[in-house]
Structure formats: C-alpha cells, structure tokens
Length: 116
Image 1: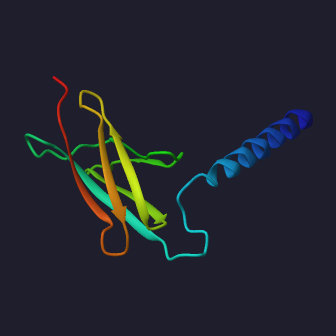
Image 2: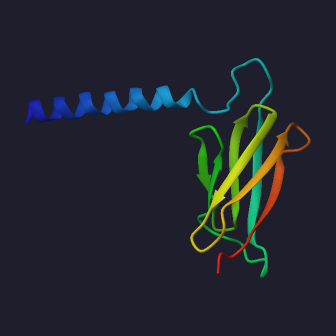
C-alpha cells in the first residue's frame, strides 16, 4: 500500500511539472507589461440566445476556456496585443475573430451561425 501511494505521488508531481511547462505558451503577463482581462459574450446570430459551453481558444496557444451559463467567457492576465479568438460549438460554424486587445478594448460580443 505504501509503494502504491508513493507511485501515485510521483505520477502526480510528474503531471504537474508537465502542466507547468505548457503554461509558458499562454499569453500571460511576464512582468514587462500590464496585463488585461479579455472577456466576452457569445450568442446565437439569429435568436440572440446565450450559448453555454462554447469553447473559446486563443489561436497559437494552449489557452482556452468555455462560456458559462450566461454565455460569458474570461481570460485573465492577457498581455495587450493582437489575437485570434477561435470559437467551437456543436451544430454551429467555427468562428475566428481577430482582436487588438488593450486596456480600452478588452470585451467582445461574438455571434455564432448555426451550421444547418
């Protein structure tokens, strides 16, 4: 039993170490510039219905999140710059939005089109 516990502990720390390596690919603040929070809302383009569980990814990184029950998403600590947000949702067309993120432009409204 003790050997099993030690084995799980080693595996846990190995996985945690790999996760930390991937963190370096995220567009987060490195201390050189002031980071901003990038947020938005995703709705259906026809009905205006808020969409729950939409995958929102910053292209070229491992950074992604999902919309909440109110169709909102949030990326905290994003370095100002130009990014492409890629959204994926079942039964909807993939959407790519190019944004210039800064302290005054850090909110977006995205309307997804049904793929049918």
